[in-house]
Length: 272
Image (cartoon, rainbow, N blue to C red; front, top):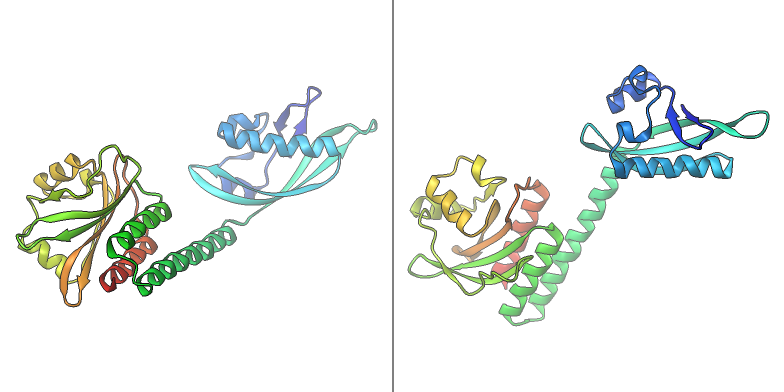
């Protein structure tokens, strides 16, 4: 329940118990507050616009919006109904909201699955067309980085002497490229090679909180790596290289769907 003041400002009056539980605010604590008192500036502006529209049109309106409460994005389907006094002035708004977050999450998951399928189909199509390998790998790195919205994607090929070379790169910081560089991880030993050789992956959300060996942390930090997702690439039964997604300056919580995508792409690269 929202009061509309004479100066067209808004003040909250009350919430029902269900809404209290959803957003973590008691009705008594909300009373008399403005949208800016409980919402971020961006969310408060969105809410104010809907309230103003309801007052201006003088009729019931319905809409969907995403707001953050306690740091959690929540989707709402809301209907606002204006109450008018004897002079036809809107003095109060009654809002009825339903939490539709599960529905929105399901829609987003379907959309992401469709995008993943399109990406895999495009890469498989390029392989079938016998496009030159270097071009194929370069396009794969670009498409994957854009899809993951991460800072850098690398394709790393092992050399016979145990070192490796970056043969494809897509980065948001092209001024400091790793492409073509021969890179040797001082901590990459037979144990790590066996780990990847079994098809295992490495998922590091924050190099400083993953229990890594200090020398490995130093090596990753020297390449401006803060979060790392690494999947092996196989040529038949032999480990050929690594497909790597990275965040450079902030931690990154990698999702299982992202890990699965890298595994599928690594298989396509092995075919290529």
